[in-house]
Amino acid sequence: MAFEYEAQGQQKKFKKQGVFGDMYSMMLFPLPLPKDVSIIMESDKDSAFQLPNLAHAFREFLGTREVGEFVSGALAGAMTKAVLAPLETIRTRMVVGVGSKNIAGSFVQVIEEQGWQGLWAGNTINMLRIIPTQAIELGTFECVKRAMTSLQDKWKLEECPKLQIGSINLNLSLSWISPVAVAGAAAGIASTLCCHPLEVIKDRLTVSPEVYPNLSIAVRNIYKDGGIGAFYAGISPTLVGMLPYSTCYYFMYDTIKKSYCETKNKKSLSRPEMLVIGALAGFTASTISFPLEVARKRLMVGALQGKCPPNMAAALSEVIQEEGLKGLYRGWAASCLKVMPSSGITWMFYEAWKDILVVQKCHSL
Image (cartoon, rainbow, N blue to C red):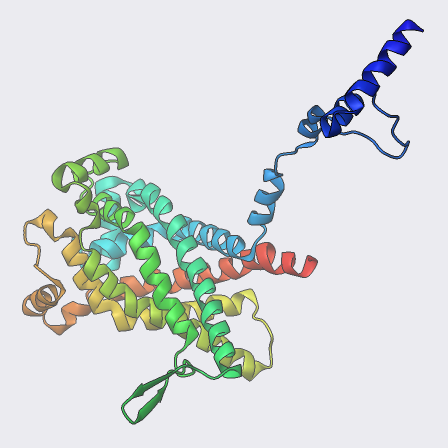
């Protein structure tokens, strides 16, 4: 009883002191809370905090259309190169003028000098090169084509931008630009800029196996000779040569594919049809751009022979002086023998993997 009286006295004493008195009394003598009201302690708040579900976000990222296209390109490129590596070796030797001047002679010469494994010389770096190259190239092509098509559709619905020069009004319409051609050019440039060092290493391993017997020695010797810049030797002519090839290659594939589907009243192609159309696209693009390919290869490996032309025009002139106009197409047959099956098989595998990784996922959503 004494304690109750004393407590009541303290409560009255502090109640007269305004807000602080009331607060103090509430702290000392808390009122009972309703049953439906609960107090969340600070420790409960901490325990309720959850980290973001990174695994779920990563799974969603892997399931996007863009990732599926990149992965499809990488798998298609790897499977194609594993089959066609010997033709790539022969083509490179003939283009740069190493060994025999015909396909059969080059096969025999490589086997006599290096054995059967010589036909796969540089195949390790070739696989390391083709996986990122095809992933970047095909993925970029799909992304840029969608972006360009979307932009064209948007400008058809809305008024396109205009440029006024004095009394002249110009409509900056994109209707005359082919999204496929722009996407093809962008794909070639992006893949070349990212993967050119791997192309340089592959050529050195193929052309001079006695100087560059394996990947690690090739990387060390190239860096020792010219530093980082040596891995980008010939990047300018490579871009010049890649631009018409890549543009023509993707444009021809898309054009032939659409024309064939319209003629046959088809919505999609069978695998053999993709193989043939891809081969025709590769043949056309290779034929148009092959002289630039000859000049590019000369510039890239010319330093090994001590007679590197200063630029692409000089390389083309040198070829014409030495071998005439037919020299611009030296190795063209071997190149077509490699490019046609490579293009056809790549498109066939790519469309197959895209059906699995992209189309089926989109239908299941």
